[in-house]
Amino acid sequence: MKVTIRKGDTLWYYSQLFYLPFQLLLDSNRQQDVNALMPGMEIEIPGFQSVPYMVEKGDTFWTIARQRNLSLDAIFLLNPNVDPNLLSIGKTLLLPIRVTNPIIIAKQAYSSEQLSNDLKRLSNVYPFITINEIGKSVLNQPIQEILIGNGVKKVHFNGSFHANEWITTPIIMKFLNDYLVSLTNHRSIRGVRTLPLYNSVSLSLVPMVNPDGVDLVLQGPPPSIRERLIEINRGSEEFTGWKANINGVDLNNQYPAKWEIEKERKEEKSPAPRDFPGYKPLSEPEAIAMADLARETPFDRMLALHTQGKEFYWGYEGLEPPESERLAEEFARVSGYESVRYVDSYAGYKDWFIKEFQKPGFTMELGKGINPLPLSQFDEIYQDILGVFLVSMYQ
Image 1 (spheres, rainbow, N blue to C red):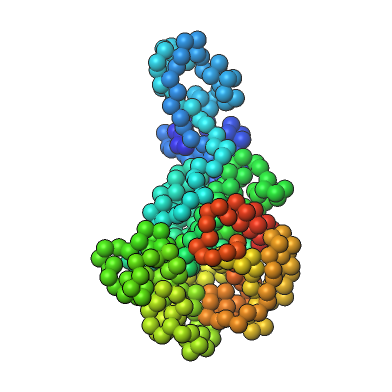
Image 2: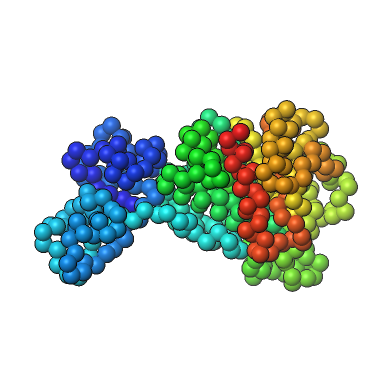
């Protein structure tokens, strides 16, 4: 919600007027010099929306404020050119309405377009988040990262490396929206106060690493490359089991962490719906974008969300730090998932992350069943993984 500064107004006053953490106001207005605010400048108020209201018989600013539990001056702020003594029936006012519930419907099959639309909606209401394009997919779709928080500790979550594991995207989006609501409403999540997390953790989220593949699974092949994709898919027009990117390369077999071993033992030696590691490591733009992101941002820990199995993997060749074991114990405790240190699989993002940085990295296998997991599992998966999200930030 945008407001126009009046003479004497400050961000500190707005934090009191709207009962918002001062830091969220600062971060929502990074483009402004907060020490040189001038009347007439526009300021963002996070966690609020200005909603039209038509004046009814008997209404005054005072009765409207009282009935809706609003600050009287907040109504004045949004209606600077309205004389409160000359309200007429049918006149439209703007009222500041606090957003107290999620504004997106996370429990849905997310296409790349839906993801972009929802990220725009969230950034409009919560302008203290930053959305970066970290790369492009094969079909030139943006791979988007959401940044939130100011802390020294840097934590990263990602989802939909694999196309038919698309349910990991809405899981991340639900956590993002719940986190934002908690911050602007002074709420805790499972008893954890989130403002201290915001101030101590810089959170990075990439909800959809593989947008082309996800769209293929959910919407079918683009007409321009339909025949090529059917050929890669062994003549089948059914793409719900497709795991790779649009080139037929498994993005989670693309990393230089014993890639040669994976290449030799994989049955797939050419583009396929799943399990082809490519002709060389880091050949695909999506894999390159994620590698570049980790190199440019020194993440302290990384969680890659996959499905399925209700288990997670956290070791690679003994290079994982002691901190990984402690976190794994906590993840198992809060999720009920099985903790697996080593698994006979290489060349994944988690493997490369541990090898490259010797920091805690985890592959989380959410839910149980046959991919793609149905949305009927969404609520259970979210409750399972919610504690893991929180532990990864506050531990």
